[in-house]
Image 1 (tube, one colour):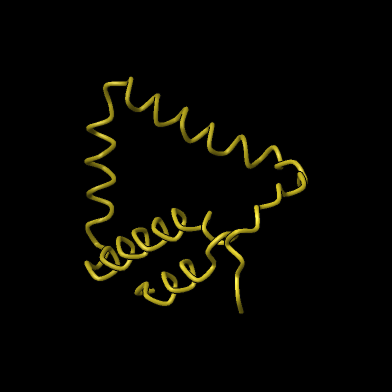
Image 2 (image 1 turned 90 degrees about the horizontal axis):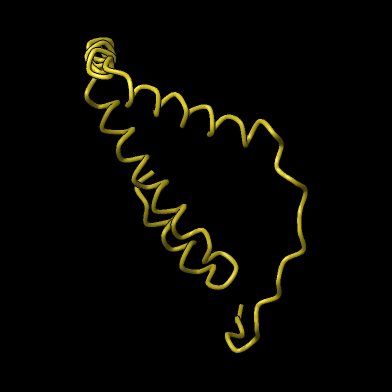
Length: 97
């Protein structure tokens, strides 16, 4: 398939508005994180969460870290889907999912 790079991109039509839950959930998470940062109990929360996660295998943490890195890279390349779809396809095929 040939892609004409000289053709200008069209502006996409506006889609449906985001549901309110998609706006409230990140704001609530940010508010909780801000509260933890301001409060003096953030060290005790970290120690509690760290102790609770000590039973999880190291291979799971490795898989989660790798998945997060790959998904972050794909999210950064997602805007190229419209203009350079081969870049995204090659990145997807090269990523170690």
